[in-house]
Image (cartoon, rainbow, N blue to C red; front, side, top):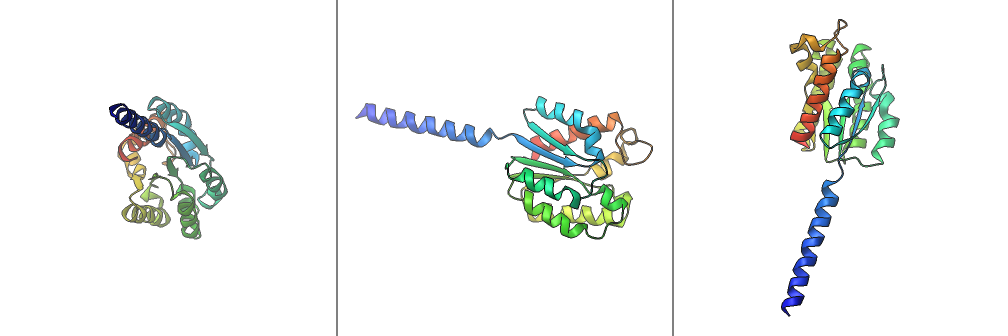
Length: 189
């Protein structure tokens, strides 16, 4: 009888370890963005790898929120552990008025993930940027799996991080963005 109990306890312990490993082994992170992410991709990939994350970076210069929807929907089928979304700067620059519906469609696609980190747009880019940031803030307040990385303000507090155009990160800014995203994953996800 003692042998049966010992074997049962050992089986439960082994099953617990196996399930825990299975639940914690998904360290895939999908990073979707525009030229800011595109320029930062080498730093992001290296930092994530060093931290034990598997990064899949999909970034297109000039892309707006709605233009990324098909890509995000396709990627969401793979159910990554986490998302980092850096979109909205081009919507703000074009003063796009259809971004709210596209933003909600994007959220619908990524919402099942255990962690979604939105990278804010510079509020200095105008009213649309401020509205996008406010929508991100509302999601973070309403959903425990949503977190914000306030790049939109941090980059301007560190002038060496932003090129002369006021939008694109310098090499120092690219490294800083990658480090901040890695930290956000480790802290929030």
